[in-house]
Length: 213
Image 1 (tube, rainbow, N blue to C red):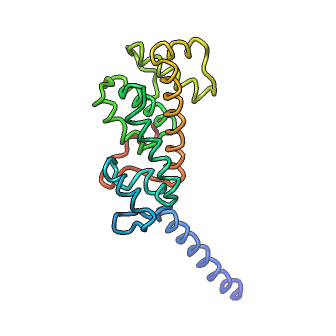
Image 2 (cartoon, rainbow, N blue to C red):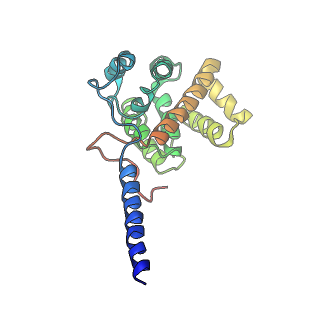
Image 3 (cartoon, one colour):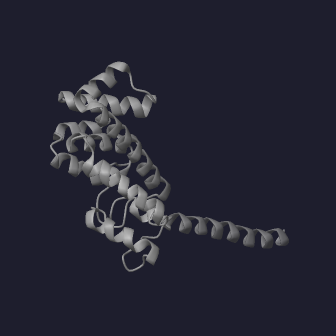
């Protein structure tokens, strides 16, 4: 009995130590936050470009993407086109990003892009309905076309002839290609954020709460 008790004590201590170590590991970020003071020479050029345009500094997707600076630069350049030079109007482009961000429940995507969407002219009630995972009511024709196009493509993995024709009629051929690209690019961004377990900047409130759909 005494031997069993002696064996049980270190065994239990080992279990507790393992549990504590597990909790400590869970509390550690997968990618420690980089700053302009800690980036490497290979990361610096991209980091400087990010700081000129990012609402989250080197946080969000940029923190993990800087770990692969060549790929990160290629994606940064693609996103620069898809954000600012695309043929899709900014209001509709940001709506597409919000649709993907809500599907992925991406705290960072929604935090960064909901304010931009509102500033670009997307109505508050449309943003609120998207956040509630509802098909927005009282959308303009172009908003409805974008909603249906992006939602069908991202959830059904195809676009119906009717939905395609409506989007093409509003955006043109280049527009539907650009809209498809922004849809896919922000799925990739959401994946990077999910993999890295990135969230909103310190002191900011996460847009989606526990229990939200």
